[in-house]
Length: 490
Image: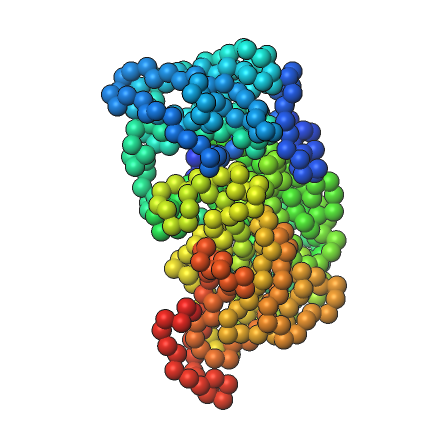
């Protein structure tokens, strides 16, 4: 976010088809926390396509290895045990489909449950007509022009979350873009505006762009992130109490999904989400007045809300009090999130999104600023002995709280849940930050060395949750004296 309060990063977006959204339906679902299920005759309602696959799929027989042939599949829509899906004639649920580049893929979809359905492959811009009568059928036919692994889904609202998703593999999956070449999506923790000078309330304008892009998750592993302005977390917004803020949200036309923005600092419907349900190719706007000082989370609030958040759509907005905050030497912007992937942690390639793991709150990764090495290899934090640092720490989640702790330090000052209405706490070892919450922690550096930032649910370190503060300066043997040894985990 630039200091003139507007920012638009270069687009780096995965190819997909345009989606039409009806704001009323999407907002209702977002506010009620519900997943929409289509009934017959509901064609034309809001659509929320999702990149996800089931972890229980069984591969169907591979298509012939030669190219230029017609590869035909027949799938039937079914509902079993409260879960929707696609079933092949041999009984495989959400089968993996195979073809070779140059093949003509012909998928016949039969309606087996009388509910409105279609079949789509958003990454390839392929979508069938809708069918809503039991026994009716539609055909999706196209030429497989490139190798890779793609997701097929039912595009109707809520149907992906209900289980209607599978994979199409064209050629050798290894022929896809190497994971190591994926760009970074991590935000530098020093990328935040400077403290505000004492001033009267102002009218400010901020612009956000929802960017869907494949990015680096871990060494050799990528993920299809959904972001605000191309990075995780989104831009740090810094205003003061009494400011009037004009927010514009843009969603590029080649996005897969509609998006929105919900500021926890906003008093009004959906925190702004009710006014910003934005279809691909669309633009929305709303204005709010900052009434209460504090540090607040913002996030996407389009169904399935948890999918949008876990994929990277979260950030922080600081509403400074009239007198501002106490002066410190350095400030850092850090957010914790979790990712629910098809591949287990450590597996190379595209990690994929797994809706079952999300719904059962079983993440594969925990991350700071979007990836496993964002704040270790890419952007390690640096400071000097004698300096006081302030950490703006938030939890995007969407599901897990954080037990924020800096190994080897004691917080001099903590603003619990980022509230400025009460006196801050002093001399705190670990502070609890709920999902969708934030805190501000300050401490003075007195001894040089490495100081890891962790969630003190420490097994999460093994799932990618690591950050490092490097402190340089003279030794202070009156406070600490000892030989620092390697291999201690820090």
